Amino acid sequence: MKKNSAKTILLIANGDLRQSANEATWQFQAAMEKLLTAAVAKLGYKLVRAHPYKPKLKHGFIGSQKEGMAVFAKIDPKTPIIVAEAVWQYSHHILHGLISHEAPILTVANWSGSAPGLVGMLNLNGSLTKAGVKYSTLWSKDFTDEFFLNSLATWLKTGAVKHKTTHVKPLARCTVPAKAKAIAKQIADDLRRRKSIMGVFDEGCMGMFNAIIPDELLFKCGVYKERLSQSALYYGATQVSDEEGRAVYEWLKAKGMTFHYGKDPENELTEDQVLWQCKTYVAALRIADEFGCETIGIQYQQGLKDLLPASDLVEGILNNSDRPPVKNAEGKVIKKGQPLTHFNEVDECAGLDGLFTNRIHTALKQPVENTLHDLRWGDTDPTGTTDEYVWVFLISGSAPPAHHIGGYKGTDSMRQPNMYFRLGGGTVRGIAKPGEIVWSRVFLENGKLKMDLGRAKVITLPREETERRWKETTEQWPIMHAVTYGVSRDQMMARHKANHIHVAYAKSAQDADLAMYAKAALAAELGLEVALCGTKADGSKF
Image (cartoon, rainbow, N blue to C red; front, side, top):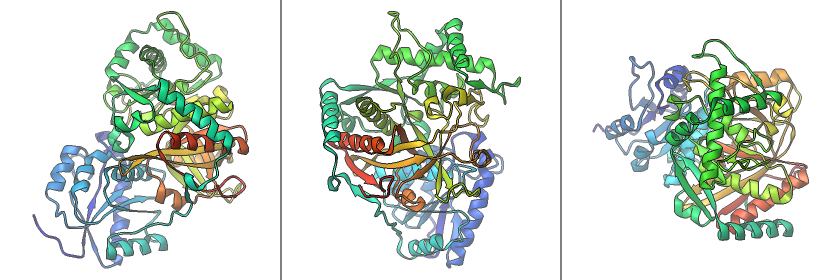
């Protein structure tokens, strides 16, 4: 193993498991690496790739855990590493090497919505946090701004850079309303006594180590996993009759949902793809009913994607109270008038959050529909509609039509991008309606379950600005224009330990405050370490 000079920094570029995605997004990574290399050189250091570009594959990403281990076996463990991410990445490809690395680690993402490097880096950060690995993190649009260069200089000299997180306040230092405490205590007692089942259709989606909660930590919350197989879901879908699948489809059309069809199944949405999704919806409900699951998570990315169209349509409808009725073997409608809380990509942290949300919002008579989104990107509004910083919350699956302007009538379905889903499948796309929301995230650190919560509002932007943001990200997916109260862009990035952020609406700002306090109190009652982030809608502190 060759020793590197003190001025040498190694660069790691982690990628997707899917060759199609790595090839299609390499252009974004290459552009980022060029800018990052120049920034490092400007400060007197040399950035050297720790693994080569692969001409035959047309990309230079690490594309598997196997490849990652081979790369790290040749790396000097005492040379500092920058993990540069301009795309979505599978954290487990490199987690092993970072766990055993002895020198400083810096994760860096480009501030762009075009390819989800920010999302990939946040997932890696959450995974490193869970694994107990020390690391620093930075982000920049073009790697020439003062914030980035000063922080990078500090890391190069000291091996660490820290960010201010004064917006974070432990729940123990907050005054929680008596009503919130009472509701939380009642729900916590019920969970400890009667318990809840979380259905998991294959763990570990897309390398998200941070999204797997150890069973013993869930047990303390009164939640137990039912480990289910996506092969069972596939088989279940094949057992649903054509008539039942079509009945779901006709129900959606009658509600006003629009499907954008084409004739080329390899690149366009077809009715056959949607009918298979409708059958999967029926199968998911029946399996959940059979095993008594209060929540379920479908992995969908690997394995199932080669058997069935994507599960996005399934997930979004499951999370809606008003959805196509499905009967079980006894002829009873399953969870009539209620959602079956689904957590996208088997993110168990979001699943636990969704369970808490459903229980709390039911007790408070607030809207129960909830979902996770990718913390995808953010930008100012060039149209001048608002001078506030507006986040793009975006996700492929799980978003319920109740969250969209116009409900089902404002919801349409487009084919999932071919580079991710060979067999297609429709999304549940819409523009999130304006209103007050609670955002939150369950994460793992120091062997403990923790939860951050905060308040935000969803705003409407001119259609041309929404379209710009869709074009900058993924136009087939549902979008939410969110403004976080008292949490800046950099504060959110410094603190957030996940690629996902959980959201739920309330009827008013006051209702949202109470729902946030109640969910925070419930989490604390069940042993989670809880913090409130930012401010209330009026700017007052928690």
